[in-house]
Image 1 (cartoon, rainbow, N blue to C red):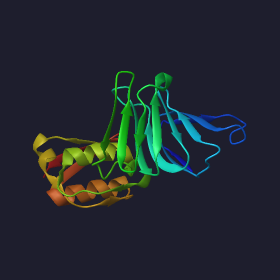
Image 2: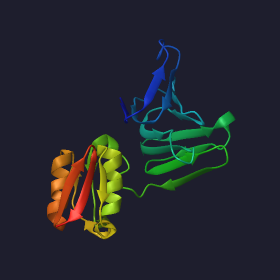
Image 3: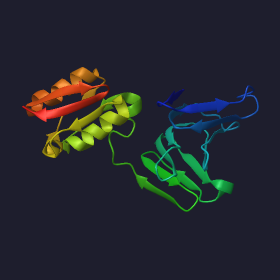
Image 4: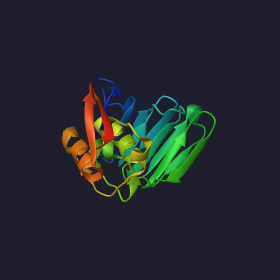
Length: 191
């Protein structure tokens, strides 16, 4: 199973599976790959290559810093830079970033990393500027606070696939705010 984020392109050859399991990705996608030790699954991510035998993982090819980013949910993944330089082996819970200049891996500390795919956002006292950034990524919501002090309010509640209007009304009711909608942009103001 492969889940594509908005504005993502996945291509593969007509003989996929018969002569390798190779795909090319531009954008962001989450993969759930069946194990097949004789036929590895490979993602050409532009500046890096991701090779797995069977696992679930997320790949981003369009980061601002031009690094290819891979998060492993289950299994193990090998990420290789151009010309197989800067190899990283990633275990569950790790994020690896590879660019032509460097490679690095770290433990994922963002509980909402895969929210674009699951639709579930979880918060425990994060500021509204963090919540609004996540809502932009997950629900394509542009939210602007007329007063920057609004962004310092903290949110402690899950947002689970609710419609945009419901989400904005919950936020407004929680902080005594009002909103107007201009095209696709929500403007928040204090009442």
